[in-house]
Image (tube, rainbow, N blue to C red):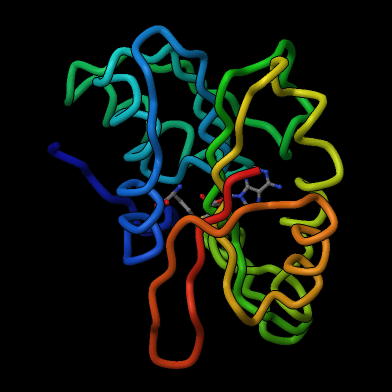
Length: 182
Ligand SMILES: C[S@@+](CC[C@H](N)C(=O)[O-])C[C@H]1O[C@@H](n2cnc3c(N)ncnc32)[C@H](O)[C@@H]1O
């Protein structure tokens, strides 16, 4: 794929590729790519025949995912939304690579790119909000692929309560990245 980047939008990295490698999408499925960034995950699902909605809180990301979809002849719907705030309906699959970096208040920066990594004190803030609501947006027997860092203790506890299954992991320098199926 030919993916353009933007200084205010997360550039695909190891987490993106770990998640992308470990999702299974069937033709015709309704897929929600939460926190789409450049759109790479959603566009890849669309190219596999899924009907894709790409969501991001960052307007630059929404614009970039639309642009990248066009560049790659992938048809996606881009929606600017804080998690599910503007989302209606239910999906077969929800994919989310959230901001998971532990970030204190004084580490925040005043730029849209902050939303790419700022996960609050232990990196779990956005993931926990997501985990408290995603089920309402899944169809019966729908599934969710979620990326989590080993640093996100609160999110990991919640995933255990929800009986999430670890499907892939990758050791990084100071953390382990994990993909859960929920
Ligand atoms: C780690 S980046 C992942 C980007 C892309 N999916 C990828 O894997 O390369 C996290 C993305 O989540 C978005 N995000 C953060 N908080 C969000 C929220 N509350 N609602 C929707 N998107 C959010 C960020 O703007 C960013 O694009």
